[in-house]
Image 1: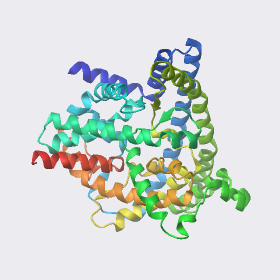
Image 2 (image 1 turned 135 degrees about the vertical axis):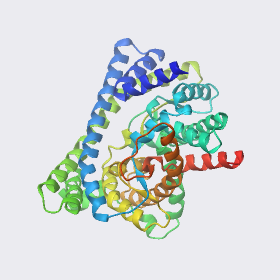
Image 3 (image 1 turned 90 degrees about the vertical axis):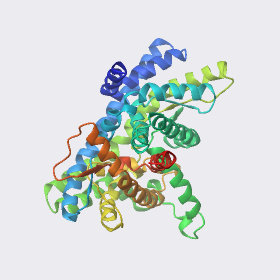
Image 4 (image 1 turned 180 degrees about the vertical axis):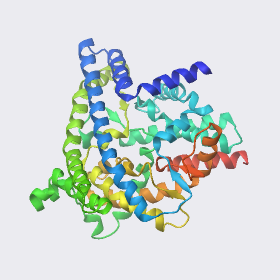
Length: 422
């Protein structure tokens, strides 16, 4: 058991920028790519993740101070503090289920592929923590039943893989990155919400025909529709709301404009790196598995780079704070994850083909769901955190995270609780 924990901790400590190129290199060689070509593809993808990490750090670093000031201005008094996904993932990996989640999910993935029950090979092992989280809560709520915890983690994983399979072609076409899918345990929960809302919106006259996308805006308003200018304007507005008429507002404006320009260019590096691997995978599957389709499962972070996603993410920050104040029964004080709201709508943008209007409306609905679900998980996450010795923030009796607002996990864990009578 200690050996498994040590290996798991070592792998997760390396991070995606180190491990993913290694995994892609090994995968490329298995797919019979030339060594030189596999190395170049692996390193290119690694460079893409380094660049993406820098952009995400810039985005969160720019928005985080502004969001904290907004939180102070709203003077919210809520009982469960949002401690963010880094704490949530550390807690999930620190449990009995989390200790062996990486080898367990990877083996499960291989079995599903061999049985043709999925088309996704999920190499995004760091985000296995979402499955560990589901399993850990189920383990707790079922009276420490290890089997129940494992089953819940595997079911959550299977659902995520199936959603990734269903949406793979849309993601590939929208971002022009071949051979990928997104099985990330939280991002996939937004897909059914999008499908349901699409059905509703498509029945409403006039509203169903609203299609605001960046290209249309640019054609109608000229320079004001450029992603650079739009990002700068949104950053300035958010800065004025947070800082007032200070230089910090201008700094935020310029940083948001820079993010709008740099993100799409980072995505193009992924396209360059994944194209040879995708082609090799297609040829390999044609020869050995009678044209069975095969996609590489990646982090939802690669979808962050679209202008619509970043703009809507920024707009959702004050909206989420307002929602946390007005929603009856909400316990969550948005805090650590608030600056990362773009991640909550990352899957929406490609599914609605970049429609800014639908991304924003659906994003509001998603954040309502997230607030209620993360409120429901607050007690369970707090108990697990105490069990593993997590040091609570000052003046905080309960913790949770917006990134733990996973409704699929919530349903599965509550079913486990009902079945076991706890």
